[in-house]
Length: 264
Ligand code: ATR
Picture 1 (cartoon, helix red, strand yellow):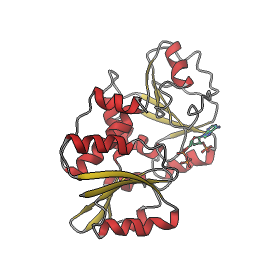
Picture 2 (cartoon, helix red, strand yellow):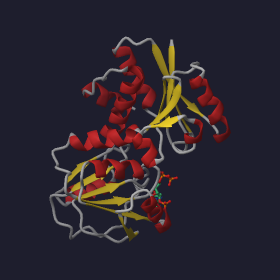
Picture 3 (cartoon, rainbow, N blue to C red):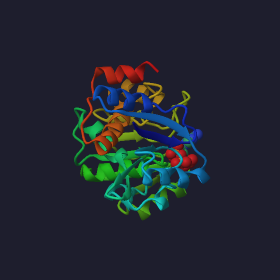
Picture 4 (cartoon, protein in one colour):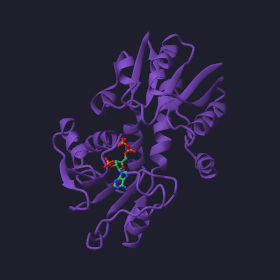
């Protein structure tokens, strides 16, 4: 039986096993997917087990998406550019790091009835997932990306990877079509202190958070008459892309999948 894992710390909250095990069963694949909490100094040994084919692949979540990179042989272009790996495969004798958060975000936005090309984007936050979001938005040919983060320096550091982005101070606002919450604010019912009362309508409010289903950020966007979307499909599609890489087939994304995640 093949074995797959998601590694991270903490890892208890991860819904990846639910999703992958459902798809494995549905496709009659003789494999199992589990979560495992690791410490930083255990990563190398764990990854060697993939090279030895004792484990067949893994997903990587916070806080190890960057720290796994030195132990890999190759990176996909997305993983290279974002310096973020969330999926590891063994391919032709090499350990290959992929970043399916990029494709996951892109697929999630494509699914919406909202044209992204040539739009102005404001991203709140500069944490681990933001390089993947910026990379995807550039692929989707947006016209402008502005980043605002509580710690200004961290937003500024993104310029070494993505030199065209603009940076504004935390609490400031700029003209946008799409605003993305990529901070952890909202996980515990927090509000984000931004003056958005004059932004107009026809905007898209996107929150990377999907639990709770609707953060205060999304509630505020909706109240002003804007379209809103949470991060559930980004999560589902990053898993979809990883599944495709490991098993060479496309799992179904349907109502049952959504129920599976809602029932948690
Ligand atoms: P990491 O920064 O370690 O990658 P993350 O969960 O990916 O962790 O990112 C958390 C994001 O939420 C960061 O942008 C963080 O801002 P800082 O860089 O200033 O830490 C943001 N964040 C978390 N708590 C916040 C708060 N109370 N107010 C504003 N931003 C907050």
